[in-house]
Each structure stands twice: as C-alpha cells, then as structure tokens.
Image (tube, rainbow over all chains, first blue to last red):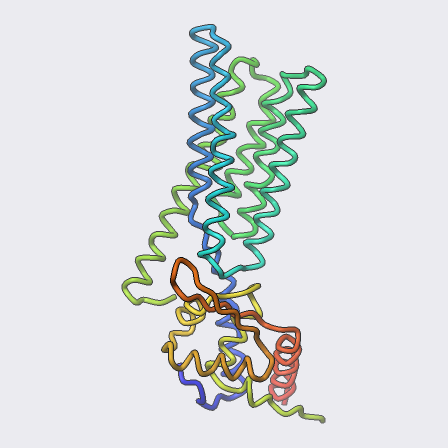
Length: 204
Length: 95
C-alpha cells in the first residue's frame, strides 16, 4: 500500500469500507473453548448416566466436579492469552460478557433449584441457559452453526418435560454436541484455514 | 455549498487504512495492521508515527516474553478527525 498515493473521494470511501469490513470480520475465534467445554460436558453427561443408570451408583455424579478444573484452566489460559493477543475488537468483548452473563445465570439457576430442592428442574433450565449464549454468539460473530446449536438447545429444553428425569442428561449430551462440539470443530477448521491462508501470503 | 477541506493527514492511502482499521477495533497490534494493510513494516512505522504526532492515535510499546509489541489505539481527537474526514468526503461526493 502506497502511503502518499493520491486518491479520489470515491477511492477513499472504498478504502474506508474495505478496511472496516476487514476489521469487522476479525474475531480471532479459535473454537478451542467450545471444544473443551463441549467434550468435558459430554464426558460428564455420559459418565454420570452410565454410572447412575446402569450401575445405580450415585457417586457417578461426582464427575461434574471436573467442571471446576476446566474453569480454573480457562481463567489461567485467558489471562495468559490476553497478554499475547492484543488486538481487541468490540464484538469479542461483547461476546465475552455474554458468556460471563451465562455463567452467572447458570450458577444462580443451580443454586436456586438446589435451595428449593427442585432437582428435576436443573437439567431443563440448564438447556434453556445453554441456548442463550450459544445463539447470541452465533449472531455476534455471524456463525450459523452456533445459531442452529442455540436453537437446538431450546428445542431440547422444550421436550425435556416429556422425558423421564433419568434420561434428561442425555438431552444435555445431545445439546452440547449440536451447540458446542460441532460448531467448535467448524470454528477450529475455519481458524486453521485462515492461519494457513496467511502463511501462504494470500492475505485476506 | 460549503466544502470542507480534506484532512491532509488522513488523505493518504496507508494512514487512512490504518485509521479505518483502528476505528473498528478497541486496540490493535502492529502486526494486525501490517497484515490487513499489506504494508511493509518500515512504511507502516513511519505512517503510524505521523498519526501519533497529529494526536490521532496512541502507541504503547511493551515487551511480551522478550518480544517487542506495539499497540495502537485511536484517540478521541482521531475519532473526531475521522468523522470530519468522512463528512467532507460525503459532501464532495454529493456534487
């Protein structure tokens, strides 16, 4: 790009539009946390279902404590990555707040259901909660698989009252596959393709 | 009809490209600007220095694991200059 090249008014306007579009399409979304959370929750769902349903062992539910380990890992990882990735976009910040809101709502939902001993309400409400940030993230980063994933969570939430409580954990498993694992892999693929494109000097 | 003069600091291809990128993000690293504008490091350094001298952007230099990092951020003065530039462009284009 020539720094002192004279431009006509329309060329200037085209340049502004093209640069704004380039910045707008930069999300730096690697899909990593959709994959980590997706696979961890899927593992927890299946492990707790198998141990509780087939072996009648309630200790299987302890597997959910894994979530706290992942949470600690995420906090440490985010702090570390923040120092490296210094291009901050407004969309990325908003998306971050959406997931913080989700996490707070999730914790409050579990706390309130537990306090009122309405354990049968936890899974359906979790499905409602999963749909919100997934759908919004899809809208914010304009990524259809996340939008579809969010809607799928709500669909699972809708049918959950008609499903036996013992099987509801399988609805969560289905929801995380559709909402986080599949979109996570697609985001990862997209991210890696962009990196490869840059390495071959294709630009944007 | 009143025509506003086009800001000479902004009426240059690379500087305008940098300002257009910076108006769209909160802050950006030098490498991000280089990659999006396809400019050379030397040329980009000179142009962002000019933008800094005009008070349109802020530059923060830091080290990250022994690697130098240059972070650029548009200032309120820069936002105003950019808005005025776009308004001036629009007035010319309505001719």
